[in-house]
Structures are given as C-alpha cells and as structure tokens.
Image (spheres, rainbow, N blue to C red):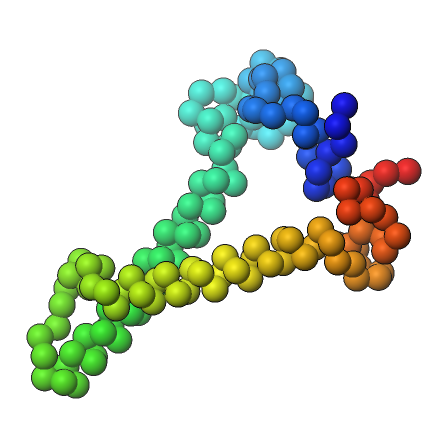
Length: 145
C-alpha cells in the first residue's frame, strides 16, 4: 500500500478513482453519524458528493462576473471620457480589454496559489501547525508515528 499524499484523510496513491458507495460510506452504507445528505441518496447525495467542486465553480464564476461588471463600468467611463459609444455588458465580454484583464488576473492568482502549494511540499516553518516538522522527508504526511 502506497503512503497517502497530503492530509491524513487522503486516499493512498494506489487507490485512484471514485471508490464504491461502501468505501465512501454513502447511501445504505452511511453511518448514523454521517451527514444527512450522504444518507439520503439521489440528487442530494450527488450534490453533496461534489460540493467542493460546486462551491469552487460558484466562487470562480462569481468572481469572474464581478470582475466583468467592474471592468465594464470602467471601460464605459473611459468611452464616455473620450466621447465614444458605450457598450453593453455582453458587448464588453467580447472586447480584448476584458479578456486581457481577465487572463492577467487569473494568471497571477494561479501563480500565487500554485507557488504556495508547491512550496508547502518542500519548505518548512518551524512551530507552524500547517507545516511538517523540519526533519521529516518531503514524502511524509506529518501524521506518522
């Protein structure tokens, strides 16, 4: 059995895939202490089974929409300042200005988050509850022994 990567709750690396309902403790295999949405089955369990993905998609789309509205407002202010025609929100979505600012913003966000994730594997902060002990190997999860 390969060691788990990440948190102590992570699956072993040699166990890829979604796993069975029994392994996931959902539906008829749920425990009495399991969350209600894991016990009910159907669409509720499907939503709960993908709740992290759903939340991250909502955050992504919400921030993208917020950025588009503020960019659209700023773009139209510049258009008015130069006595040019303003554009609708859907018209702004098709402009190079929107896509340039969107891609620059997400590039910097992914770089920051990606850097932190990679650095957290190799670097340590002595005394931090989020860091492995300084002497543990990179592959260790911090939950051994």
